[in-house]
Length: 616
Image 1 (cartoon, one colour):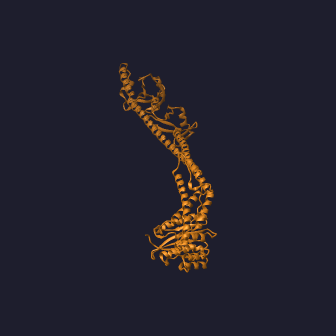
Image 2 (spheres, helix red, strand yellow; image 1 turned 90 degrees about the vertical axis):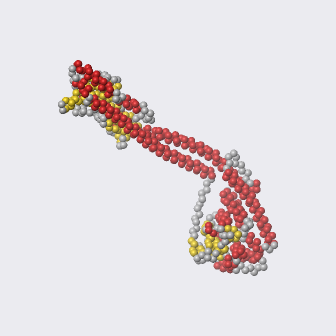
Image 3 (cartoon, helix red, strand yellow; image 1 turned 45 degrees about the horizontal axis):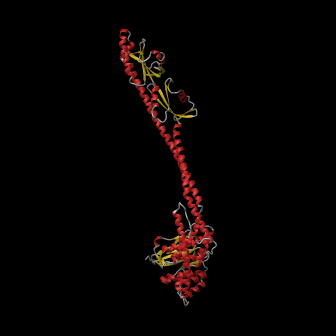
């Protein structure tokens, strides 16, 4: 292999790999994170509440305005209907023969009977509208008839009637029967020959005030201002201030919006053709937003109270959590300083309110302490057993155990845990202790052949410990496929190779390195290939050549296996793990399944294991 730094040749294919970048993690205390969550919750609720309040005010304004538009439209139609009734009454009377006979009669003997008939006609017609207070007819010859009152109230109104008009017209206002009424006038025409001749004037006194008072008594949230103006500019109903708002022409804007005295008004205008009268309805714009603002303020107040309550409850809930974590941390620090007997576990009492997760962490940590103590005894027992085996010349078993357990690794790991404890690295201590526990638990399992998946998990636990130890000295890349994870391999054959790559390849290097662990299958030859590649210091050519020869031809000249390993330990003490794994592979599968080694000084080293592909 010319350049192990860039590619690995397997099954006649070039597999490219990329080195992942290390990401820096940000660590914050639980108290700061809790405060951040509360602040974020408060900000989200304020933003959501503000947005909903704004949308509610906008929607409420639109609904209120639509309702007022509908109300003003209905009111204008009702007003128009009232004037239509007045027009129909006026047309009926103006062309009625009974009324015309009375207005033109001259003989006193006939005048009385005509008066009675005309009066009854006026009374019956006035009953058709509840807003008509009086109907009066004045003839050109001086005859006069009215349901109520005298003709003094109409003396000046006849002169204001526009000449040449034969329709019902508004003649302004007058006091009729103690009521301020609108006077509607219409000429009474009589057919003489081929032409109509005016025989008098008809006057209707309409109490427009009672019409609007009835509307004001309706159950509506807001009573607007009304204004009725006739063609001559007379105010039929309403205040002069409203008239000034419309006809000042200085404060009007498009869309029917007017401003006067620092107040904004929406003005709806309707032309009433019967008679020619303009109806205005004034709506104060502040009513559109006042109720919405009240509800929005109420909602903001409720959300503020809710935030305070939630914040207080969360504080009461998380306060025991913070105290429990603090006590757990202090206990770990005391264990690190040697001031606590870890065999008794953590005497943590959470109080009235407790957390299941905290209790599980405490139980798991106590179990880990107990298991660590058991592992220490197990380690001691293993060393004693290895010593007894050495005395009994069980060379193969000794080589097998030496390939699994490295005292230097255990010593370095325990030293690293002490350093983590002094730096208050609680999570790292838990991870490291858990990984170490998994490695030793795996190493003492009874099975000799295990699935590749289990072996990779142990490798990941081992690398996690080495990652903490060497910090950012190297990165790890896995090129694995789930299809091969059920393949059976001898237990603890990859870990010594990974350890050798880290300790003798990456650790002496002065630059950051990369460790690649990959798995692939060769279906043609029926084996599974596992390679461990590091970009460490590599090997010198003469050392590489000699080590490759020992891997290809593991013929021992020594009398015993222990003598052979003692010789190899002296000659290749930094490669004893490779030799142990190589011997095990040959014992299991034959000499053609020895390790493949390739290395280049200053570039890196690649070790490949070939195992017959079997899943059962």
